[in-house]
Structures are given as C-alpha cells and as structure tokens.
Length: 297
Image (cartoon, rainbow, N blue to C red; front, side, top):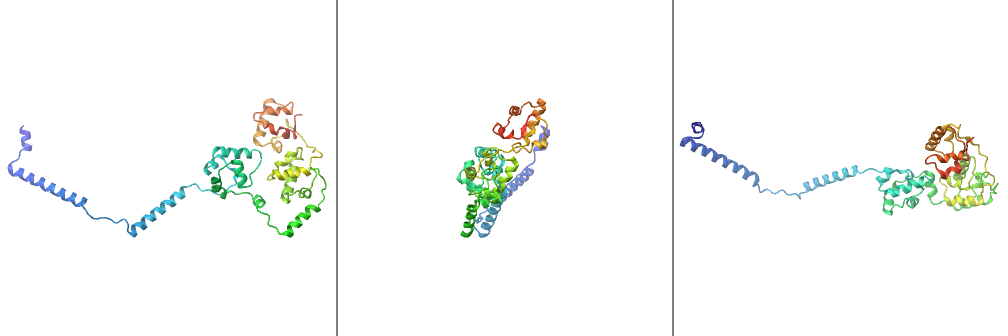
C-alpha cells in the first residue's frame, strides 16, 4: 500500500495543478476539432474550371477504354480461325460452318456469300464486313461491269466470231473457254493450268475445283465441253514413291502423305491400292481421284 501511495497520493496544490492541466488539454482538443469540422465553406463544383477539368478526365478515360479494345485489321474471311472468329463475335456453329465449307476446297468471294455459308446475323455482318479483304481479282470480279457500249459489243462479237476448235474439255484452248459467258482471260488460263496439274480431267466434276470458279459458270462450261477422251495419267507405285513425289498428287496434302507412309511402314508393302482405305481418317470421298495417280505394283 505504501508503494501505491507514493505514486498516486499528492497534496492539494499538486492535485489542483494536474486538474488544471487536464482542463487546458481538453479545451485545446475541442478547439482544434471544432475548427476543422465546422468549416462552413462550400466548394462550387459547377465552375468552368472544374467542369473543364472533369471533361478532360472523361475524355482520357474514353481514350484508354478505346485503346484497350482489341483492334481489327483487314483480313481474308476465308482464313478465319476459331480464335479469330470468337474475337469477331461469331458463334462456334457459325465458325464450324465456314471451316466445313473451306474443307471442300471452296472459297467465299463476297460478304453475301460469307453470310450464306456461316448464317451470321445482319448486325454482325455489318460490323465485321468492312474489314473483309478479298484478292484483287475477286474485287474486280464483283464490281459492276463498266465498259463502254463499244467494248461490250466488241467483246460479244469476239465470242460469237470464235469457232470452237473442239468440244473436248481436255483439248479445248483458252479461246474456246472464253466463248462461255462468265469466262474471261483469267479463268480460261486458270482452267488450263488446273488441267495441266491434273494431267487432264478424268471426271466432269473436277472442274468445280478450279479456284474461284462459280458453280453456275462451271455448269455452263460443262454444257458445251465434255470429256471425250480420258487422259493417260502416269501412275506412281505407292510402295516406292518418295515423300516429295507423293506430295505432288493434287489430292494429297502433307498430313495424308504422312499417314500413307506410316501405313506403308507398318505393312511393309501394299498388295492392292484399295488398302489405302484401311488408313485411319482416309478421305474416302477422294479415293477415286487419288488412285488415278497411284498403283500398288
């Protein structure tokens, strides 16, 4: 008890001094807080300076939001991937329709044809079609014909005047093909180049594989030209052909070529060319065309 008394018991004058000190501290604290929180000053937020500053902040925010959006650059819609299609806002079903169409070795050549294939909505087409970039020859083909009347008559007369040298599609010249409405210089040469690649047309429907040739125009060609004499194609032995030589087959891509070689390694030797059908995921719809260039012995 003596210890506590020595620390907490003071005489009267000492207690009065402590009381006065505490009172002064409390008065000072009340003064400080009342001065800080009782300010009656009202800030006007509608001044021209504050409004201009706020507008500047809003514009900077808008620019930053715009910069964060993924930018779209011109692209060929024929080569849209799953990732690209998702960025553009296409559904998986729409992307799959385009990919399935491309697997048939066909191309979309206009935004209208793109919508017919993918079934995208009008609103999405309006949004993304300005970024479509087709090859120059496609753009020219889709443009309205603007030649003069004299040029039109001259072109028509040239078609009428030219006498067909043959109706055999494997012997027809570029001039022969140009007599068909819708076939000009570019397509006539393209048909001939594709014919050389095939070593000659063996089936009428091979004409539909000519890049960019519309089905309606191809139908017109086939009403005039037919396969009179089937081509004599130099076949390669599937058991001895090299990888590079096999890739020259117009219907065999790198993946299929690799599968054929793997299968050949497994069986040592193909006894019959029909064994190709045993390869997993072999494109059976192309079998008749692929074997035009191959034999087993």
